[in-house]
Length: 255
Image (tube, rainbow, N blue to C red; front, side):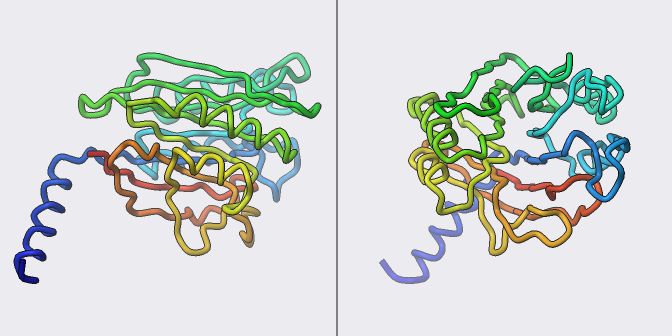
């Protein structure tokens, strides 16, 4: 087979993939309960968070460090409020009870949420409880799963939590996107564990933390390896005010 024919076939295959792929815009953002790190603890700015989400045009958003009915954030249900401000559907997933309120993660979706799972992640070492939330949605008639989490800081816990996630999804046939603040750098054991069944989007210097001069990659967007997909437009949004993390944005083309 000559080179021109090989090149033609590769272009044709790429065109076919492009025509049949579903482009899904994904955002993962640890919002620090809406408190900009350069402001006093009493300042909560959800309007800025919502503006970032809307400007990204994301179809699915995984948010970490969400307050619900906590005094420090003026007893706001932040998941519900952000859904209202962005015009999206939402779920909240509790990690812990805190000061008569709740603290955890949230998912926002442009499309109606058809099914929800919530799992309490294992913590063999005493620590703050963490959860895994999963929604099922249809985007352009394609059914997918979108999962969001915030892994623990303690090594033993986050490794076990990563194993729980791989066990949950190792036989999953639907395209499954996993996002979150995983408190792990790319070569850490938790990421290696997740890489058994997920492929992560990556760029050079994909640093998201701290927000002013990022030096650490701990926020991720992944998809299960059984789903033919391509990442594109992976970027760290240049947002230095809203949170102590920068938002992570990726487009995923799912065949």
